Length: 320
Image 1 (tube, helix red, strand yellow):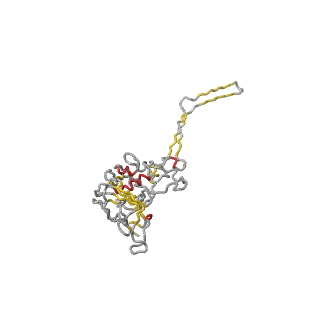
Image 2 (spheres, helix red, strand yellow):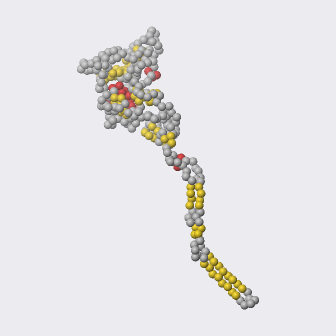
Image 3 (cartoon, helix red, strand yellow):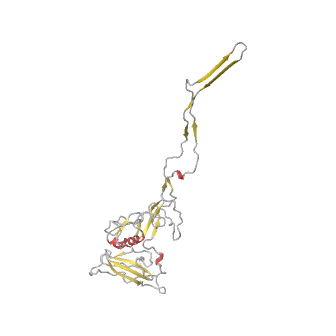
């Protein structure tokens, strides 16, 4: 069932009694430090508000509706300076025994800050940012994907979930995510352009070793948010199957140089009726030119080959 708390439609003031213009109201799951919970613009709980909600110029909070149960809220000024925190506030609304709308909404079944969604579309989406390697920050930060107060919850979430290697903070990280956000720093979103998604090598189990031969682009095979693999690969000799090259061998010609014939001879001639003997011998030398092997050209030009699977393309979004 849908309900609300007394802050809805109320006007808020700072500690000097001035309207809390541009203040920020965060909705957090009860009894947690900073786990976001959605507030909605309609009693059917189908159209979420940004989290945080930004107060208008008069410091007034717009109407909002919450799922049954309890809620924690945190109110800051436009610069993120905390004004009040209240936990375990009871959401007041129709009970299951009264009239009104349908069944209650389990807050674990709706999108929370940091959740990821993929859609086969292009462009921005209200309440979300694209994971394109650009940056988030407050209105004065100069962030390239979104520079607005409504990214504070996601800024803090990214700061706590990912290392500075994967989500670097401009000029380096300070003491905590909220301090860096208020200081006007930016944090870089993960860059999923051209990426498919895959499971960690361990996922709560022992590492399977299935990425052993994959290049690591960033992070590691058991670190969430890391990138492994590539869209193309260049084959090397070790990738080729064994084969016997074909070709031919040409023997060089044999040459007999002139004037190299040498030898000895002898003769014995007797008188009439006597025996006769003739003896001779000779030798010669020859040379052969070098033997050459002429192979048939093999292979190609080492052009990288595509290893990308057939993939439907779209946009990865991260919930504010």
